[in-house]
Picture 1 (spheres, helix red, strand yellow):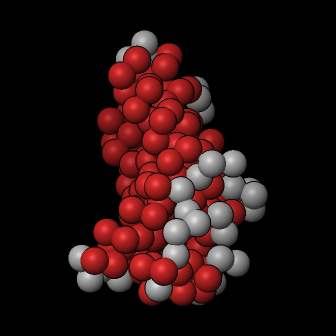
Picture 2 (cartoon, helix red, strand yellow):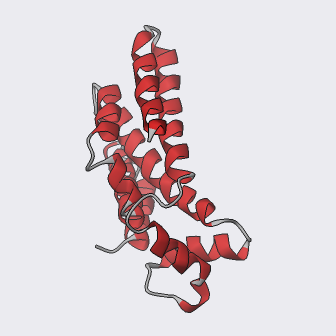
Length: 166
């Protein structure tokens, strides 16, 4: 449980610096820290063990959305661990959310802190990995929508339902 204090300490360190470039660098280091915690957890989250069992028996399982199924299948066929597949979902989630916060919030550092400390956000990403990866991709598509980059917008907007339909 004490591992969850590390992001809080890192966030305090983020606020100590005045140099904007360094703060931006530390912001992404904070995202990396949350990504690593999410990727290398074991038996945390209500779906962890069921996803792990599905991963181990992926050839006989096909109820997932196409991209989710592909991520699990790819990791399994390449002889990667379940945590590798988990890290892909974690990356899609954390990057999408942090990029969205960075581009749309004046106080994006506070948004990152709130994402971590409010239980319905970061800790829910441990429970609903496919849904949160889809949310991350939709947030990323929003970034490109407002930048008027239609190709990237469509790419990420179409990627989201391939991870989770609902």
